[in-house]
Length: 421
Image (tube, rainbow, N blue to C red; front, side):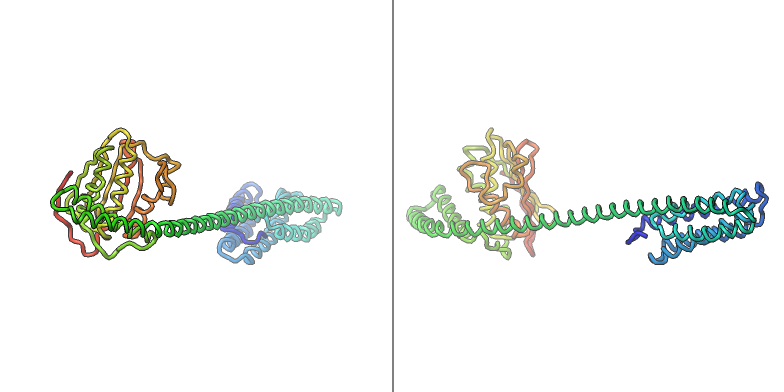
């Protein structure tokens, strides 16, 4: 008996027992009309019921019950065959030949259970001399019959052992495959942990680098803004320069703590930050490619500060503009969607290679020479900390489309606004 008999093996064995029971029962008309043996009806009915009972135990019982049922069925079946052989004419009748091959049938009905085959054979070795004695046949014929029965039993036991080895090999193969899958999963988990540690280490390095930069740049910006205050009156260019300086100062504050959490408790007018971002990046995109802006209706407020969102949108717009080489327009579309807003920035460039699409968010990785590879990383970090999603996908125009979905701010009322630029 194989350890851990599977449900499939149980169903196969129960099916064989059911088939054998049906075959046993349908032989009764042959006994009656061909062999003139009407007295075999109760015997065949009892034999069929034993097959059905053993099949039910095979499906529902414990492994010990399955083994006991197979042994009892083998012994009972051999007794039934001996009885039929006696009723049909003894060793000279056709039923006797079933007795000689019944160990093979037992191996077929209970595959892998050589104990059942052995129990069937022992019952046959004990019952055959009684049958020969009842018909007063010579001992030589008995010995030949016993030898044939042993040969059949040997083949049956060999088949059971071979079946057992095959099942054990299949079980070991499945176990090895499962262990390999577990090992691969553990390896993938460890690889992910190492990658997260490397990213954290890069953030620490980035923080150390920006700490020194921030102090000196803030000093220079302070002097710049102080001088702009003396000359700023109504000149629009000076006002834009002053606004850019103030934004740069706020950006440096954010840069000094790249790994800090975003301002999730603040809320922002998304249309205003888009306008500001487009205006601040205009000196760059005006020389490279036009930016077309379209606003939808009923835009809700979103979480985060205006400085954070201006920096994010400026980064995305400049990335799109720099990716465009044929002055194709960069299309910026802002629409209200369920539970938030969706911002798409669609460029007309050459797109991102499939090998690079998963790496563009890694720190210090960039496909363009002279870039630090921190812009997209910062954008995704801010958006995700505010509960949003940033995705890159191929554009219908052959370039790249950056899509931002941002949920509405808590207790945000929609803004009634229709605008385009």
